[in-house]
Structure formats: structure tokens, C-alpha cells
Length: 106
View 1 (cartoon, rainbow, N blue to C red):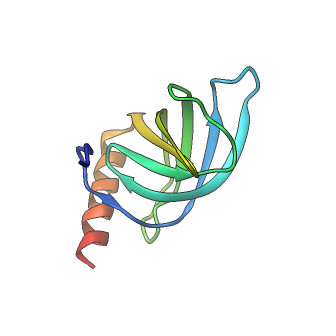
View 2 (cartoon, rainbow, N blue to C red):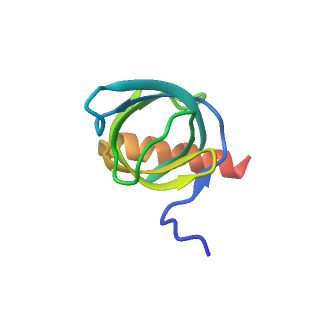
View 3 (cartoon, one colour):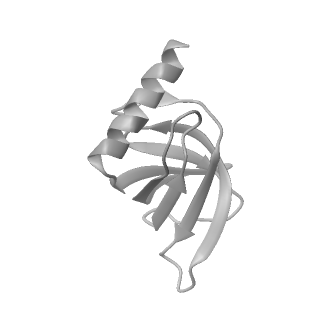
């Protein structure tokens, strides 16, 4: 059963991640697997623990402007993590929702 509150778009684009949970600040760039207004499923090479706070920076395909937000790892997957967006500007949340709606209608 899918527990997501928001619909998601299965697209790929680069995402910059800064891991705040480690004593060092690891930066990693990877490809997003799917995104919705409430979070994203991210494919990555590193290991992030559940509860790890992350800073995400990305541009949605065919959508102007960079999105920067704080998220938290909610689940680990075989090839990545599920991240819930915690601090996301309302206008960025709206841009993501519009992007997902447009992507799902195509």
C-alpha cells in the first residue's frame, strides 16, 4: 500500500546533497528517481541513516529556478533513500506540485 500523501513524478535529474548528520559535511551529487511536493526517492552511492538531515539543491527539468530545501531520510532502499522535505518554501512546493501534475498528464 502506498502511504504517500502527494503524487510523484518518475523523472531523473541531478540533485546536490549536503549531509549534516556526519561530523564531516559530505557533498554528493546523484540522480533523483521520483519527486513529489512532500519528498523524493533518491538513488545514491553513499550510506545515509534513517533520520539523517540533508540539504537538497536541484532544478526541475523544464522549470526555471533552483530549489533548495532541508529534508530528512525516512527510509533506506536497496539503491537509495526516501527523503521527506521539511523546510521547503511554499512557492517551491507549488512549483513541484505543478511539475508533477504536468508530468503525470503527459
